[in-house]
Length: 172
Image (cartoon, rainbow, N blue to C red; front, side, top):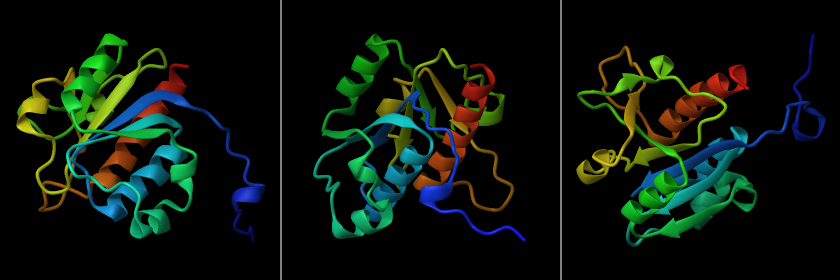
């Protein structure tokens, strides 16, 4: 019977991907902490927390993040439009994780190792702002098979990053 491995005895490959998370008004401390852990797990290069009156560092966030906020590059910006314009000017595809009329199932969207991706995730209850949806290169969604049409923002981000990095590793 095999035993559980821990941080000091795992053999995972360390890799950073050209993926930046852009959080549109995500403000729940537990979600922010989870997003840091997920971003660290999937080799995200940077996180932007966008919106007014956000509190990124809190005791609840720190408990959930388990120190990953010390390793993942991040910054706070009030104006998400400026962030997205800057990333687009740097060659990033601006991809929103949101169910829309023309969103593509994430497994059917093609991500390659040469892509630079800015993955936009939305506020816990309302998702990505309507005016930000117009700034996206594409929208992707996760198929769900139950009665609900949405899931927790951190959970959805983890699923999306799994698919994106999987595809980037295949084309690497």
